[in-house]
Amino acid sequence: MGTRRPSNQVSYLNDLCVGGPKAPRQHKYGAVKVEVDGIRFDSKKEARVYQQLKLMEKGGVIKGFERQVSYKFVHNGVKICEYRADFVVKFGDGRVEVWDAKGFKTDVYKLKKRMMMAFFNIYIVEV
Image (cartoon, rainbow, N blue to C red; front, side, top):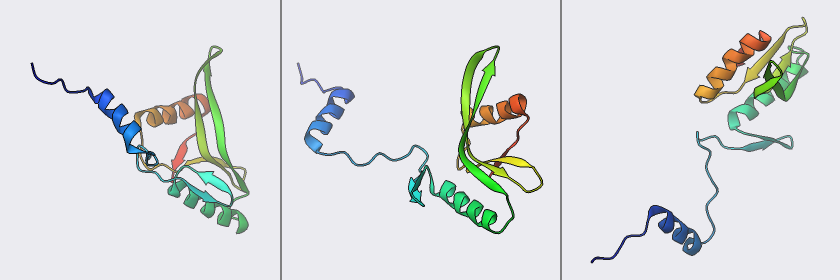
């Protein structure tokens, strides 16, 4: 009888024990976390949108904006899920828009985008 090869799991555990400290884990879709003005952003793109919104606010183009606003989807008293908007942008004419710094549109995101329209009549602007 020949020697038995270890399963992938055993091999993986051996690599962890022998290989030393692990390298930082990369984001599934390649996003790189960054910090701007002491605020940690999930991606460089989201940080750029934040900087753009700050300039727009300073220039009077928008009245203001909020980050990471949560919308809960509740039906018949049962919470289904939650969508966290990257930015909620307020304009001087009273208009409010939800902005999402989207790099990759997952199926879950696409569903939540449709739910935002169905539950709250809010269209998400992808920037």
